[in-house]
Image (tube, rainbow over the protein chains, first blue to last red):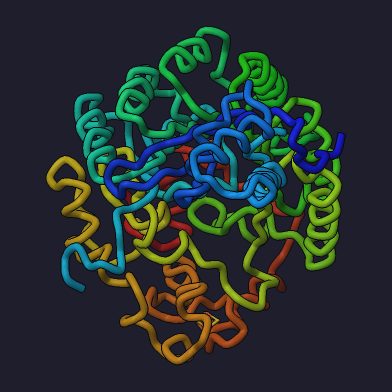
Length: 94
Length: 377
Ligand code: SF4
Ligand code: SF4
């Protein structure tokens, strides 16, 4: 059961105990997890807001393409890389 | 340092040691020798007010530990308040009091994460070190309950001479019980742990073996089980960045409300620790002398002052420097560059796994204070 690489077909969801959080004092977004905090930059925040356990990676990419008018393959690569990084850390399951 | 110094933001987490009461008596307990009595503990309404301060100050995570935090009957109420203020809530428990009713109440209160400590994976060893019959079975049942409830679970295995060879079984138990995360944490030698140091220290070979086991398991279980590993300082080349640096990230609140830069800081002489009954968290963080004294690098002696690692490990642990050299402002002896580094080898030379344990508990406070030549309470 080793985690497979994040593909467009995957449906990512937050790991157990992980929560997307807006830090009102610092006006930043982050992920809160057992004994850990992850600060999210603007791009990562937009991606994580779309991770709901229902939408596939392809669906996330599509909605970002519409919003940012960027080439689809560039966005897809960034989204997969970011989610893979979080999956390796057990913060996201995909 | 000026108040609101741009270099230092609010702390990320606050640790509430809610009580020093605990049904167990682990000889490695990092609580201070002078345990605080129930009558001195903060009342619910004060804790609620401090949790409000946490939220408005910018704290993100709160930890409820002890002693055994479940010894306080208002724990669900406290958790519910923290949760309602958007704080991420963690409980560090021994597990022996976490029955169905207790867990249901915490889940309803919105607990985010539970951490259950294990003295050993060997049942007899666990019960002997906790000095509590049936502790192991109660912990197993508690861990299963947490997993079944769908809550995130960490198992915290404390390791020392007697059980360090069983690290592989600890990792297996973590998988079996459905934990997301385990900690393999060597005893840190403060408080009661320091009293029992020669009894508990592992050998260098034992430690190296455990480290290799953990490193291999981390690769094997990547993405499946997270393993945090804490080494003892006694075989280290460099100290740990204790607490990420003095007063950089965390406030620890003792049962009676003393605000400390770390849980062991109460042992340091010559400090007045402000109490959350009298001061706001923000006031304590930016203005109390105890928090300012070792924050940053200005206080450092050589060799730290001109060392390139000074903002990486912050000169190590102040409490360890005091415990081992009698002066909190010296370089942590765990560092090979420290003038006092020889005390680490001296401690290792005193290792003796045949000694009896000095169990942690109110009944032994007088005895250990005498042993340490401290005034008794
Ligand atoms: S270390 Fe043991 S004695 Fe100390 S608080 Fe934890 S369970 Fe209780
Ligand atoms: S000399 Fe000080 S700052 Fe440098 S590594 Fe040792 S403890 Fe750290």
